[in-house]
Image (cartoon, rainbow, N blue to C red):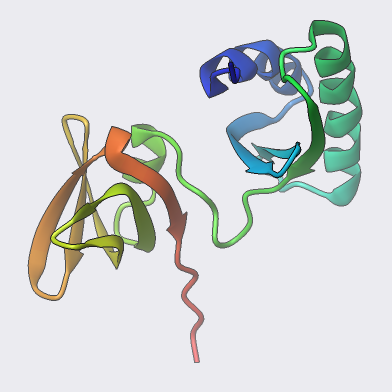
Length: 153
């Protein structure tokens, strides 16, 4: 049985916070017999490659001791970047007014991918404006969400 992301977050978040970073989120993907675990960290001062390496060493030590992930996996520590993934309602609220790309767990109106203006949150739903309409998606129904970077031309 796979470990829940909440359990993994609870294991590593205190150490990441103590190092002066915010645990932005955790993504896990299966790749055959191997898994990929991406830990996103953030900081108001930014995140450097050296920061990622330091956090990677600490998180790796915790995971080696606790051994919460069955099988083999590759650990990556990264900044969320410009196309940052969104994991929580608070993150969706923080980035209200930005364009986002969503992929749903199950199709809605025959499609799983939506891209539009993040209008905010209401209860446990994410509000998205696109094509002149407003959509409400329960956060539990969102498989993946990312900010769509905007570049001034």
